[in-house]
Length: 400
Ligand SMILES: [Zn+2]
Picture: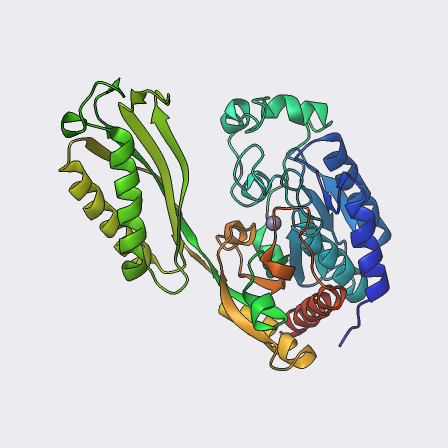
C-alpha cells in the first residue's frame, strides 16, 4: 500500500491556514481576497503534483490528470465560515492533493466553491454536477452583506470563465474526507468514521397571529398573546419529539421573532423557524406528522397558528462498495478504532451522490467543536485519516 508523507501533509495544511488566519482559526469567506489567494495557492500545489488545474467560472479549482485509465475524484471545499476553523473543508482538499502525489495520475482533485453557503447552498458542487442556471447567479446575493454574486465573481476575476461540468463516465466515484464536526468519535475514543448517509433537513416557518395590545391595561384573561402561544408550542415540541425522533434525530428552533417586539406591548404576532434532521426518510415523515399535530392543537387556542414548510432535503445514501473500501482501509490502519455513522451536517458529497458512487470519511473533532476558531484535530488523527483515504483510493482504482 502507498505511504503518505505526514510532514508534507501537515506543512501544507498549516501553510493554507495562514491565508486569512484569525486567532487559532481562519476567516476566508467565499470569493474574498484571502479565499481567492487560497484557490490560486491550491492550483499551484496541484501543478506541482503533476495535475492540470483550472479555476472555473464559479470558483471551483479542479486538478485534472492527462493520463489514460480509470479515475477517482477527491475533494472538499476551501472557503470557511466566518471566523471559523482551519480544517473544515481544507482537510479534505489537502488530503486529495496528498493522495494525488502518492498515487499519481488516477487521482483528480476538486475544491468546490461556497459549500459554506455565503451565497447559495453548494454553489460549486451543484454547478459542477447539475449545472447552474445563469438566472440563479443573477439573483443570488451574499447572505451577510447583500452584495451580488455576479459582482463578487467579477471582483474575484472569474467573470466570463466557463463553468466546468462533471463527466460521470470519467470516474469510479467521489471520496470526501472531512472533520466530523460533532463529538461522537472524540467521546468514544474512536479515530475514524465511515459515513453511511448524509441526513435530510426539513425546515419550517411557524406563524402565530394574536391581538396586539397594551401590556398594562389588557387583563390576562382576555389576552391573545402570540408570544405565549409560540413559547407553548416550542415547549410542546421539546416534550413530544424525543418520543417520535430516533437515536440520531436532532431538532432546532433557530430563530424566534415577536412583533412588534417591545417591552410594554402584548405581541400581536410571532414567528419561529424550526428544523429537524435524520438519515431515515420514514423518521422525517413521522416527525413532520408530529409537528402538524402539535400545530393543530396550538391552533385550537386563543391564537391562530400556521405551519409552512420551507424545504425538505432527502437523506443521501453513501455508496456501499466505497464504504466497504474505506472500512477495510480503516481496519488495516487502525484495527477496531472505526465506526460507521451518518453525517448530521451537509457536505458536497451529497451533491456528487446524485451522479457518482460517493462516500465520506470522518476524522475526530476535538471536543466536537467546529464552525469556531478553536476547531482542531490531533496531528496523528489527521495523518491516519489521509493514509486510510490513500489506501481506499488505491484499492478502488486497482480493483477492475
Ligand atoms: Zn465543511
